[in-house]
Amino acid sequence: MAISFYSIASVLIILLYNDDDGDDDDDDHDDDDDDQDVVDDDDDDDDDDMMMMMMMMMMMVVVVVVVVVLVEEEEKEKRQRRRSKKKEEEEEEEEEEEKDEEEEEEEEEKEKRK
Image (spheres, helix red, strand yellow):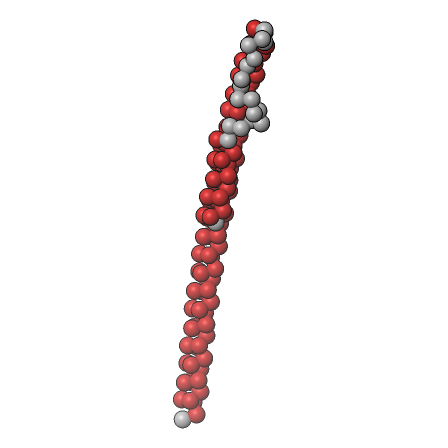
């Protein structure tokens, strides 16, 4: 369980901090571009930053949901183990009581025979 959580978390962290948007030009601008294109590039950078922040926020929500689900699952398993353990203890007590009753009945039969 813990291994799966850590592997999921590490993949999400890698995805969150991966800044590769597929552009290999490294934001190099040609000198012969007019000013309007530069302004548009700034707007695109702002939009990209906004998208990146939105994606990071969504990833964080996913991480929180995954953690909550895993914790709930683990708690459910613990409760189930407790129930099964309690049930086994009750069954053992009943078996012991039945054995004691059988022994008492055998002793009573022996006394009656005497």
